[in-house]
Amino acid sequence: MKHRLAILDDYQDVASGFADWAALEAQGITVTTFRKPFASPEALVSALAGITIVIAMRERTAFPREVLEQLPALKLLVTTGMANAAIDTGAAADLGITVCGTPGSPAAAPELTWGLLLALARHLPAEERSLRAGTWQSTVGFELAGKTLGIVGLGKIGRRIAGYGKAFGMDVVAWSQNLTAEAAASAGARLVSKEELFRAADVATLHLRLSARSENVVDEPELRLLGPEGLLVNTARGPLVNQDALVRALNGGWIRGAALDVFDQEPLQAGHPLLTAPNTVLSPHLGYVTTESYRQFYGGAFEDVTAWLAGSPVRTITA
Image (cartoon, rainbow, N blue to C red):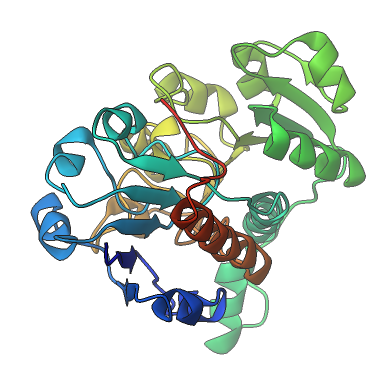
């Protein structure tokens, strides 16, 4: 069987440099790269007609059941990372599609989180623009030392953030639905209720996986509790925050500001109200976009493909 492989959402046109795709082509496999997002599920299905292997970059392209059912040739779906809420793994199993994951960088997202927080606290984007326009100093920032850092979700990323907070001299509190006092303490944090976290935090940062119970975990009540001196940072998933409420909070001065790397719909569309909301630092979902991360993603994807071709798939993901 002649295989056809598609690499999706290679925004920066760099996938070719992170794995030896030529080795697959030497085996008679056709490799096609798509740089831009697909405009619709119909466009995706049309583009992938006859494709047997797909490499998906994180959750940039969704593969629900209704899409997978229209891709009868698809046999292997590789996602970068080991979790992808945009893939219906149950449907894939029903349809005989193997789903595999890859390693990822544990440092990329936490480092970006802290960079966004510092940029927000010290008004760096605004000051950079002002400097280029000829103005020397126009804002007054604030220090993190001595402030309270509230972490919503104390998993692998949240624990790193707790360490950063302690290194900056912050008091670290944490909450999630299943977090225990012992687990929080082992990360250098103190367990509090969600209400207590948003009331006490000078900075609230989100590091939960998106699920039915975590969607809109931050809504108007939490933003009101955070208050006019509080900052919100979200580098996890856009729907963790009610974005309509967040826009109202920013425009109404309920909170001091927000740093966001993730949004309800990505790419963020022109004219979105967050683009003009005050006191924001926005980035285009760069949490995992590093050389080190891409090396693991694409290198791991290449390993997944070669292992599957050899009849011994690795890092399989099931429903």
